[in-house]
Structure formats: structure tokens, C-alpha cells
Image 1 (cartoon, rainbow, N blue to C red):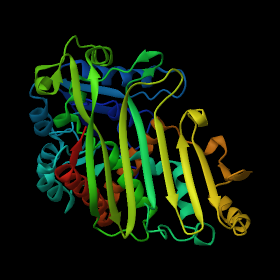
Image 2: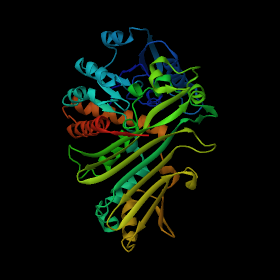
Image 3: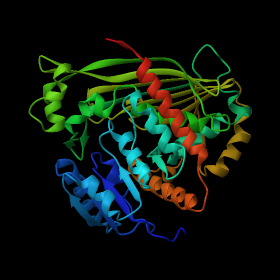
Length: 422
């Protein structure tokens, strides 16, 4: 096995556009023919349309060739025909781990979107697919972000930032976000599948977005991270989703019958918000993920991050005050060490600048350092192919498998132990 080998990739039931984004750029290590297996329906049609769009765009067309196997028995057909050894999954989250277990036992390497579970019942599948080959890896794009890498570098510079979590009276790391059910993409409402509003299928407020945050924590404290995390508290709460928003965001005329128990007077009570506190390697972490209904005109999703060190406070925000652009602000009790540290950081982040302000320093990276979210997915695919090739040579990524088990086990525990509030 060499890195020159072109891998044939199979896509199964792509219910989420992340499956298509993996192929937003051409990759010489991926065979031009991609085999698509799925039941018929609008979700697979949207996937095909996205791939066709990549192929037909004027700039850097991808030239993928889709071999479509559409039918109710598509999973059995994929496993029997075995056109390739790598399967990509993105869509319904509820049954994912059981499906991954089946594929794992059949010898397929799996790259799957998160979250892999929506409750704690699936944990036995998790252990089975992460203890030994073949590979099972989740799509975590955040580690390909230069802004996040700079954040980590600052936190890991004790001469500037001090010790992370030195103040034990408050969380050392905090993540917050507010996403929106209805948002505009290219001037049109983003269409979501009806099952997106089913917590047993999509996941509630203690899964999905939280998995990204736990992965970021593992990255931030990587020199210290162990294979365990201690859950402190967890809570979820609901948001009322009116029928008119459901119609506009899905194209459906009514709530489906499987949501009937959560609907009253044409309003769905959706348990999509969640907060967890935990310790990892002794570091206190707080994560809050919420949803709003309609995205504000000209706005977008809101994100916040805070890291507290013995000498510094680091904040990263995306909100109306920042013009919905990421802003990183570093406040220091003693700034003397910043100048020599900047020289070191610039070796890794060319063009980095620190702009003095009333309450600290605004950290600026040149625009060419930023990789748009959608283009982080092809990088994730390339990283996965590296893992596949290395595993074929006997290099099993035990540390990655341990991190995956840690984050999914932690959030399964949070799901099971969470208190509910209005």
C-alpha cells in the first residue's frame, strides 16, 4: 500500500450535505468513480445535485463520476458488491453506530459524520469499532483551522498566558454557540430533512455540536489529555418551534406523526439546547449549545470561546459586535512577555499581528491563513486517507481511537444523567 494508490470510495445514504463537501475538491488519491448507495428520495437527489455542481463549476471543476445504486436494498447491495473498502456516512444519526458496527465487522473502513450516537444505548457499538482495525473515524473539521491553531499556541505559552485553569473558581475553558433552524444559503432558506427535528434521529441538545467542542478541548490540552473525562453536570432545555418555521425549513406541510408527542397547538417542543460541565486532565470545561429560530438578516450563527490562564484571558467571538467575523482578543496581566512570544508565534503563523486596544490585544492573521469551513472537509478526507494508508502498514492510531471513545462516552453519560429544565 502506497500513497499513490487511488482509493475507491462508497457513499451510503447521504442525508447530510457534509457527505458531499468531502468531495468539494479533486483528490488524486480518490478514484474518479464514486459509488453511491442509497434509498430513493430527496436527500440522495440533493447529494447528486451538489456533486454535479462541483463538477460543472467554472473554477477548478472536480470531474467526479457517480455510479448510482438507488434502491430499498442499497445497503445489502453495497456490502455484497464491495466496490471499495471505504464507506462515508452522513445523515441520520440515531442508527449510525449500529450501522458502523455492521460495516466494521464486514471489514470496511468508515469515515462518518458526527454525532455517532443520540443516546447512551449505543455505547457497546462504540467500544467494538474503536478497539481494533478496520478504522472508524469521525469527521472533525475544526483541527484544520488556523485561528484555532493560533488559539492553542497562545494557551500553550505559559510565559504569556500563565497556567490554564489556575483560578479554580470558574471554568478554564468555555464554549458557547447559537445556531438557527432557518437560515439563508444563496438567498434561499436552507432545507432540512423532517427528521432533523426528531431528537431520537438527529440528537438532542447534549449531542451534535458538543462533540466538536470536546474534540477542541482534547486538542487544546493535548500534552495532558488522558483517556478519561469526569462529568460534573449536564442539563437540556426545549425551544418552541412553530409549524410555519418547520414548513419553511423542510418544505413539509405538517409535522410528521413520529413527532406527535412533542407537538401541542402546532408548536413542537424541541429539546435541542444543552449545557455540560466536566473536567478533562483536571481542566474545568463548560459548554453551552443553543438554537434560535430565524437567523437575523445579514447575520449568522453566534460563537463564543473563553480561556482563562494565570496571566491571561483569551476570547474568540463571532457576533453582531464583530460584524459576524471572528475576533480574537488577548488580555494580559503582564504584557512584557508578549513581544518575544510574537516573534516565536510568527514562525508558525506568518503575518500574525497584535493590535493594542483598551482591554488587551486584537490578534490578526492574514486572510490567506483562513480556510473556509466547506474547504476543511476535503482536508479531513485527505487526513483519513493518510490514516488508512498508515494502518495498512501496521500503524494503528491508538491515541485517536482513545480520544473518540472519550468524547462519545462523555456525552453519552451527559445525555443519560442530564436534568431537564423549562
